[in-house]
Structures are given as C-alpha cells and as structure tokens.
Image (cartoon, helix red, strand yellow):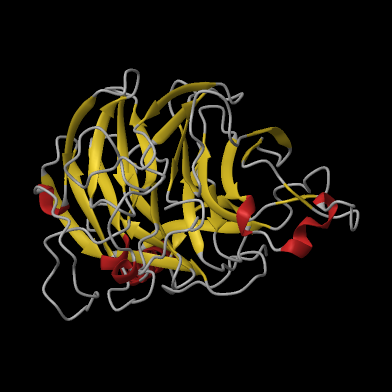
Length: 410
C-alpha cells in the first residue's frame, strides 16, 4: 500500500512537472511567434523561364501578368537593347546572336514560351514606349504606354523635366490572347490633362474588375489620376486623384519626405491592384506611398514604403497574395531593389527580400509584380535588368528577420 502511494505520488508529481513544462513550452512558443510574425516564404527558381528560341533577347521588361490559366505574360521594349544585342538583325548579318524578341511573350508554368506577338498593325496605334500588361477575366490582353514621341520614346521619370504639351502614348489597347486587335481607348497626341474623360496621358498599368467588367487605369506618367472605363465599350465612368479628390496638374516641387503629405499624386501613378473585398491599391511611386480606395473613388487609407527613398521612388507595383483573405500585399521597389511584403490589414512591412544585384533572387530595378493561383510570384526588371523571375511560394513561416536577402534555394 505504501509502495502504491509512493508510486501514485510520483506519477502525480511527474504529471504536474510535465504540465508545467508543456505550459512553459507553449508560452515560449507563443512569445517566439509574437516576436517573429508569420509571413509567406519564397524561393527563387533560377531555371525559369527556359531559354528563348531564335537567339531572342528581351529588353527593359516593364509588365507582367498572370492569366486565368496561370500562364505568365510579359511585355518588354526592344528599343532598349544595345546595338551589340542585335547583331543578328544587321544587314549584312554580323553574328548568329542576337535579335529582339517580340514585345509580348506568353509562358506556361514550366517556363516554356507558348505565345508571342506585338508591334504596329492595322487599325490601332502601337505605343512608342509600351508599358504594363494585364490579362482580364475574359482572357483579353491590355497594354499601355509611356512614350512622349518618336524621338523621345522613354519619358524621364523626373517630373521636373517632363514639361507640357501632347504626348504620343495617350491611349490603351485591347487584344485577344493571339494578338488580334479589339479596341483602343484614346488617340495619340490627344491627352488634355488629368480631367480629360476621353484620352489618357502616358498610362502605366491597367486592370479589369471581373465583378463589374470595369477597366481601371493608373494614368500615369503624364496625368495624376485613376480613371475607369467600361471594358467592353470603352465608355468613360469616373476618375479621381489623391485622397479621392479632383486631380490637379499643377507642377509639384521635388519630393521631400519631411514635407506634409502631398494632396496630389506625383507622376507616375504607376500601379493598381484590386482585392476581392473591393479595395483598390494605387502606387503613387515618387511619393513613396500606396493609397487605398473603394472602387467608387472613396479614400480609405494610405501607407509609405521606405519613405526616405528619392530618385525613382519606392512603390513601383503591387500585387496581392492568393489566400482567401488576401492577407498580404507584395510591393515591387525598383529603387531599393527589393520586394516588400506588407500586412494588408495594417499596411505594415512584414518582410522584404531581394537586394541589388544580377544573380537569381536579386534585382536591378524590379518594376512589375504578379501572383499566380498557387501563390508564386513573378517579377520583371526595367532599365538594364531586362529579365523576368519566378519565386516559388513555400508556405507560411515565422519571419526571423525583416530583410531576408536573396531567397536562394536551400
């Protein structure tokens, strides 16, 4: 009986110790998780996409989109290639390599090139400097442009040097996935400013709301607004500027992070993304901020990303995570050469990855960003970056440090 009592007491003591240890473990785990919030993990795929055929090379790559089939679309500028990158096009031919790829390229999930087209054609005006690509819920492909004229294809990003007057790329284009022209909204050299309902002025990016079939345009490098059209007819619906106000084209002083927040967008109004719950995220690039609106233009909130960034600004493009709640925003920061992961609810930065460089997982001027149905990320790089990269989604995990560097495969 005494032995049984001792045994029962020892077992009870061991159970109490185990419970205490378990409680301590879970308390420590909770403390670690509180200190290291959960965030998405990514790993660069250094072998995506596969090599292009025909010795094709791509220039400044200024748009990426993912269609309903999870095919990845990019658009680039052949005009940005150096002469020695086009030896195969010389007359007489100077070398086997290389030649510019067509402006629009379509890849499947394995990285195979499955479609290509683009350039001038009958019935429409091709941009002097194409910019941005989107594939809507019906499979239509939309393209913008930021070219001032034939002698000045790429508009300076410093708005103090932009000047006034007509610009060639004052329109957006709509095509089928095979490149058949469908519609043009606006005409060349016709943009009359940020309150012109008929024409654009150097539009940077588009998206179509599948619920309403409305086209949203980040307009853009010349105007300071978001403008909305019917995606089938091109009929004007509405537009707005920063904070949902009427846009103003008055020249702004250079951005100073110490100044009060600008009441107007600076150029370029560069990116737009629409969440499932009806919030529109707008990249006010050289103001280093993202403003959030309802789809009717009602202002909701804003945040700054790397607020002290000068030069080209920090908020180049934005995409949303593909979980049901879309908990995260992914922001392409072409000046700091990183991708920022933001909590969509609080708009706080959870983590960043990338960093300046030319190796896989690094960036030189990351410009555009998109997400596929599996949560994978795709980025493009402008200027001399000239590439598209894929970052495989590896699930959620604790964020041990904010700046994660290049997410190289382990």
